[in-house]
Image 1 (cartoon, rainbow, N blue to C red):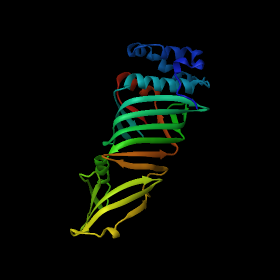
Image 2 (cartoon, rainbow, N blue to C red; image 1 turned 30 degrees about the horizontal axis):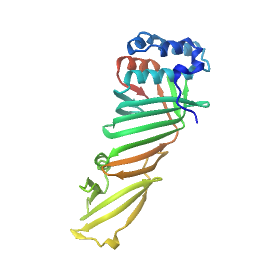
Image 3 (tube, rainbow, N blue to C red; image 1 turned 45 degrees about the horizontal axis):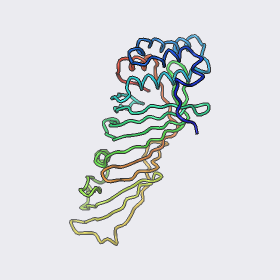
Image 4 (cartoon, rainbow, N blue to C red; image 1 turned 180 degrees about the vertical axis):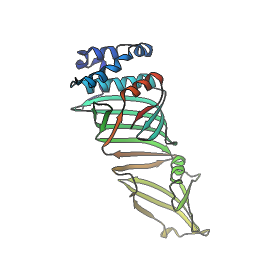
Length: 271
């Protein structure tokens, strides 16, 4: 299995002066001083002199530049019309044959103001397509993360469900039907886009429902965005651990905007 590469020691990049000038400076100030090298790929694109090494140079510039500027700090990203705020912990890239694989670890994430404790995003089959703008395409995304039960309940209560949800002191979920006098205490998990609901207790107008009437229910998740698959989601105490798979996704970015955002520490935009 391939390991995450260190661009500083990659023999192919030793042959390009651009790679050396980008990666040798040991401090952010020196990196900023030499940051005019960001213009070289753009000039090459305009002159029609793209080489086979250009995607590697661009990927190195993006990963090294973003990690140098935002590693361990808060990062603000507009990603396909969604606002993402998080602390960037890890950003790694490795080549897998003709494509790349990236690994990004974020903590204290807010996705459109919805809080997520931590998430690891692994992008498979990543390709950079040079141009103005530059396109990035991933064959698949794996999202592995944790969210608090309270945060998930808060999000579900915005979805116009038939049930009003709240966290029970036991860690389970207490559900009250919005139109019927039914209250239930439930636990839930997801596997393969199937929601499994385990009803622990229930009452009708305050009268307990016999346990033999209760049980489990399985509901297919049919309203997810196209090509989204929740392979696993389980509750552990006050946390819910999940794994989500997304099929092919494509975005575009402007190299000049990315360069400016890295230098100024402002919002990164992928559209």
